Length: 216
Image 1 (cartoon, rainbow, N blue to C red):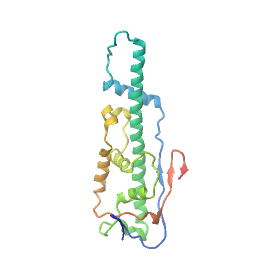
Image 2 (image 1 turned 60 degrees about the vertical axis):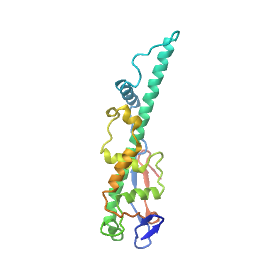
Image 3 (image 1 turned 180 degrees about the horizontal axis):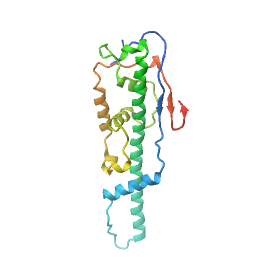
């Protein structure tokens, strides 16, 4: 066992680098009808009464200009709602990819003698499912603005991402990132400790962007 700072790493026998399954991730959300999504956002704005239904115009105000301002505010709110939802959708796609990748890695570990015991809870220290998420971070996998703990957390919360129309404006605007991070931490705690990390220099894998079919 190697200890670096406060982190513990499992010992991998031998000296070779182990090839893991590729991580297949859709980095660009599949949105076929942006106009439909904007329409759903507009409906949420109306249903949640995010803007006053009746506006009292000040004396001497240009009614047409004020109406244009109101429509502009509605458009800005709709764009913000869509942006928030697309952010959640991007996190979900990453989380879905990571959860499936972990499953493939567990299968791979189970078929290799030198790796099989690393996931056994009666071995101290041992690796767990969260160790694979740490491995992605240690390998500096480029995720853009996506946080892996939140991504896995939202995938654990939702087997399939609900459509935008299922959410309220409060959810899309004010949802704390810690909510899904807490789901992730609860998932981590399901593995009996102590859980150690996987040494990043001993593993290799490709990240395949299925949106572009490019190998990173």
